[in-house]
Amino acid sequence: MSPVKRLLGAAAFAIASVGAAQAAVITFEGQTGPAFNQRSFNEAGYNVSFFDPGAAAPPNTVLVGRFIDGSNPASCAPSTCPTDNPTTYLDLFNTGYVDITAGTPGATFRFSSLDASFIASENIIYPMFPAALQVIGFRADSSSTSIQFNITSALDFQTFNAADADGGAAFAQEDFVEIAIVGFGCNAAGECSGLDGTPGEIGLDNIVLSDLPPPTGNVPEPATLSLMAFGLMGLGARLRRRT
Image (cartoon, rainbow, N blue to C red; front, side, top):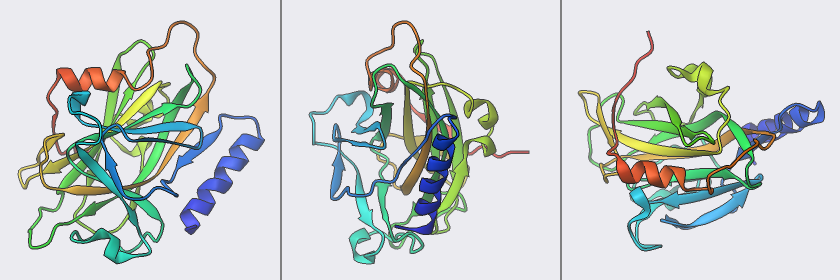
């Protein structure tokens, strides 16, 4: 286990021990092979699933990503992956998204941070910011809000904190029943598109969440809010720069 993951585990224990909201880290450890649409697994008390836009395709027909063994560079071929993460991480394609809900029905949670890196294809010249990640949070009343992280062309993992994004301070204090993480491919003009197969892969690891008590009232079925949202809208963005 990497020092980063050990530190995150220690932080989660320290937070839990003082009776505050418990931190959980989705590390993807133990996952292997391709991540097709509607594949799911449970880690740290959360359900992690992969979907194509609107879930229109039959299960296991859309390759949303793949799991990379960072200790084995050959597992990334034919792409060029970062070399500073020896653990398991997700190589997220621009064909689908990661969906996360709490394992306890009705439970809410907050998003804190994630680690991400650009993953390059051979013989392609990329702009300084070739990709972006959006984290979309869905509330119990079915409304949503989002933050975005710009991903540089450097092939190394960086930690992106919610508070560092535009509107991120408020986002980090929101109580969500579901979040979706979507990758975008961006051109030199800063125009980005997602969920459309645009070239560009993003390495994703160490998604830090915090548990909150279950809300009162009716809560939508897990993993339905993002499906409804992406089925009704196109997805586009521009690179966002903080001033």
